[in-house]
Image 1: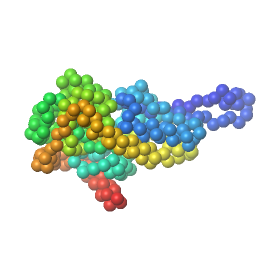
Image 2 (image 1 turned 180 degrees about the horizontal axis):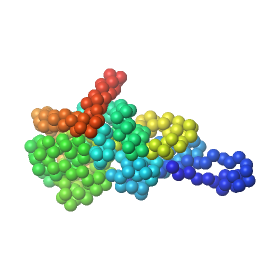
Image 3 (image 1 turned 90 degrees about the horizontal axis):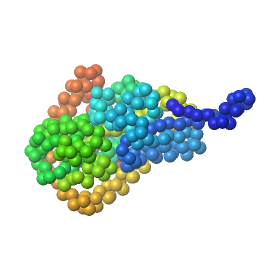
Image 4 (image 1 turned 60 degrees about the horizontal axis):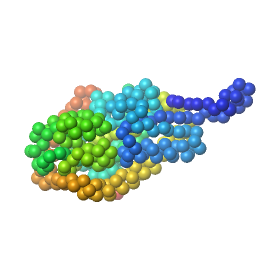
Length: 337
């Protein structure tokens, strides 16, 4: 954790008088550019600074501290204090988090995504998993269901996915592989180049990422209702840095999470209102799959959850318990509304 002492404080130390408390400065590693996906990080930084009268600040860095696939490594060695990670970027580093990336979990909106993530993050097995990296989970980055943009003729049936090269990570990649596609797990900031060079035919993203990483600029079509799943990208903090916070700083950080998430969801809602206009402006063809085609996709991926549970069990991780935690949280969220 980075701290600094003012000249006045240094003078006070020299002359043996009471010194003012040191200010706390954290660095947060994200990637790309500022967008809906990072608005909760920006908001929590703003709130923490306000609540501590500037004594606790969080500097948000967009790619200047680490590659997105190495943020967890940076947290583990204390290279920075906060970071956004995506489970599918490194499944072996955070296997428990991949439970939330399994296809067709049935999550319908961002509030439900927050609910299942919060429940998952609270599970002891998940916390133990992240502790290997000296990391502590702070909050989720709820995202809507992913859908595809592609070039050329639209892929309007599940059978047409056979041989399709798609940028998709984690459970989404497994889902597309189950119907004959060839998933490639390039980082989000590399997706445009992968699409432009023909490394992939299609890219699976949430709407904000199609805009931010400009894959929409190369697209001829968009799958309106495929909705196979999404990725899980929590905000984590270095455990030592968190432990070093004062009670007031810790309260300011933890007490700002809900407000930051609310702001994120509000901001994302505004983007979704613009999304239809973007598709029309860019003359993107919408592809709607019939219920019969969607059922074929779901049927093809039925075994993925069982395979995931068996894989977790082999690592001593309670896979079924984690999946049940998600499903129970989803039911509770719906019952409360």
